[in-house]
Image (cartoon, rainbow, N blue to C red):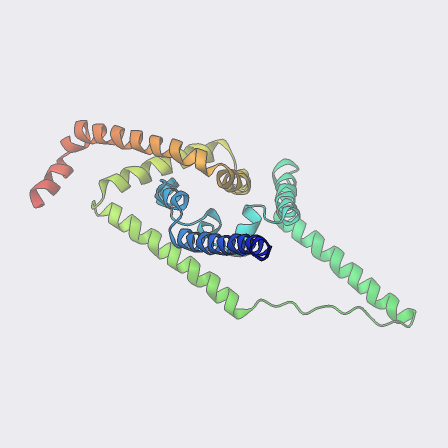
Length: 251
């Protein structure tokens, strides 16, 4: 009887020990698996991205609140900004309202309302409205000026290198870009062009971020085809230009 009573207790203890060992082995295996790099992440890291980017779209757009607006992180703010710009475009382009006239009318209305409100408060013995002091922070103005200065200087440096004949490929790209821009400028006003660019900034990045895994392979194929066509054009046309032969002699 004693042996029969001990056998079930031994079997129960053996089962508990086996479960403990199985849990420890599974936990150690999971730790080893966590230390190993994820193959999906490594594959995603090797995927070709548009324009050779290695960072997410939000970081490419500069991060912060402007990127949040362009990528519709806060739909109310993004819709409000797009609606305001659309209203300005309708006023100035469709209704042909002038900017100076609009600014003067807004200032006249604001000044008249504040003047009447202040005088009405004195008549009914109430405290006048507190008009906030508006001023531009000097640091922000300097940062904007510095950023514009850097961009303008880089543009001048690029134009100088192109004018010096150092990069024929960049020269062709600039000529083609200016030619396309001149065609677009002749068909629409500057304000309409600005509005189109603004709408594209509010639609293209968010759509690309959503479907980037489908867009990037197509863009890669397109870039390969463009490089092939450029190589053919270089062999048949650019290599026969005297400037190219002079550069080859110098090299």
